[in-house]
Image 1 (cartoon, rainbow over the protein chains, first blue to last red):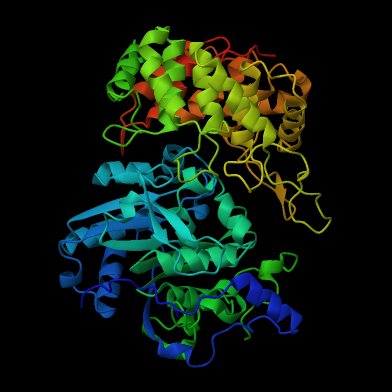
Image 2: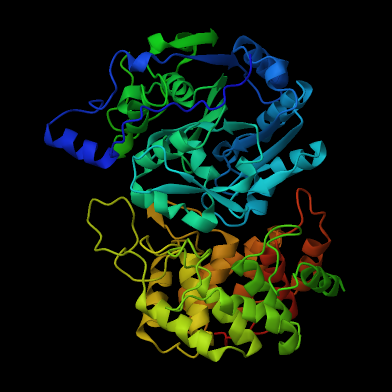
Length: 341
Length: 290
């Protein structure tokens, strides 16, 4: 099966997230009121969960199996230019659970090349620091990329092009993107499985903040914080065609993520072509109800399905692997989002 | 000396119209052109040779004094102080510098009186400068604006003193700065070398040493470990501004310049910042230190 031209689906009705949020509050509706409903516009998606206890496990074999089970044969990858977008936030060698592990990036690069990709590039626009080379060095990824001769592009300082904002959840009419996105046939979001103090969880959709150039939006991507993080996530996901998510959940982060949380071993890689469905599955694996995470609830039926019944599970069953990541009740975004047992 | 080869690299990146490419083969931008001009002026290049670059920057200045990242991205104002520093370093375009200074002094980051329930600990009411108009003030754009205003002779303006207060307020409790948050949801964030260097450079001569002693101490440790040009360059610029340049600085710079450029050639702006630290062991940005 060929990779989809764009995994991001959107109900065309233009809505203003904040206005709706305000209306919901005024109506006294609880969290999840904006959830799209039981039918989710008829959307369905496949998500693969694979067990990987350690980073030195044969991750490439696992990813190849994931792609095969998701129907992504070599014919959908052969000759394609692949852009891998890991989550590299801050340089900190002592806290490796902040960033996507370099061996997961290596496994993905090798898998795509083995399946015939024309090229693989790793690209990131680190959110907190202008010195991307330092983030690369401290994360351990620089060494891996050098050994494998994989090029890296700093999306914070890349050439630019503009696309219309197809989401309409913020006031932004358009989004300015790095040119490298236009030069890729397959864009892969590769986040870490983490809790987040502004959004509850940070997964393949929130990871797209790192596509947005710091030279345009500032550090830490100020414009999107100003516009609202949840609506910004939705706008970026609706406007940028991202084709696949590969989530590093071997060691994730719980508590006060995305930087200051504590490591949490979860022993999984999660893979899928629909980012909302992948993130909803990851949320469940962390013991979080996706319907209680604002951006996921709003993505429901617009950018993809989040209901369990609309997600065709491949690989392992999340119910056998889920574990309750620590949530901090004093952090509003993490309050009341726990998945009921 | 490797620095002279790096200077050659910089010249090689200049186009016929005077603009510098962001990296080899890439499009030019204000950041690369301004930093390259500052570095080359510091290396003693004649103003006449730099004139095409300085004029290219001048052509990007809007009527109100700002130099936005791109003409259609008018709110992205952070390159403005870089052009001011470039013109000032070369002693040219004083009218342009003055106009840009007036623009900076008319604009601030978004600021507000912090509510008790807000999860951030810093004083959000102090005005500095943002990366993008309409957003909050952060460390690097504020530090750059302070440096540019002081170099332009506007160091006595109350906005510079207010920025001094902002930078001091945003210090991390154990020293150093990151992009500009200190404590969020009760947890202290971590410092970074480049932002700490920029803040220290801006504060030199404005505040007493005891207020930044912990930050100097942090940076002295950080620069021993980092070899990327931007962090090492800013780290040494900040320490030099406080007469705390490490004895091994020249060796570290050589090490950085000699390091294999593993994934891509150094960006022009980063290379230039490192060269500024290398070539000007005193007052790297032309501002008297503390």
